[in-house]
Length: 134
Image 1 (cartoon, rainbow, N blue to C red):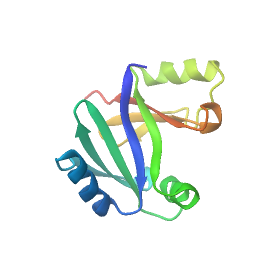
Image 2: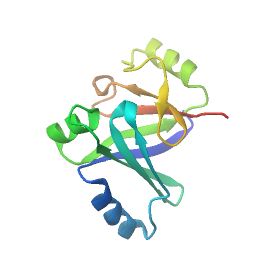
Image 3: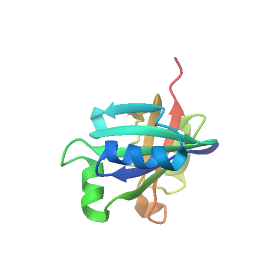
């Protein structure tokens, strides 16, 4: 893993949360995007070299809606940038981690993504991200 790619925060109302984080960082979100496969609307903020992703559920059965119902707003996941997501999934699986999606899928911000189950990572949902090469 190369670095923390972003921290994902689950929010109930994306537009209201965008205003809060815009005030916090002194700059607006640089990108908003819907990821239909995950049932979320997202926005991204930069703070120096650090990226924050806000996630709002678009349907009551989406993973973010379930998270909000169970835990409320807050940190949802930590994403790590990887060079080769397929080999990293294989490596982590061989180390005993529970991989939620062994075949990477298209995520927000031009990334291929895969998730590790929190049961195998001390309660933290881990996202692996690889930039989609064009």
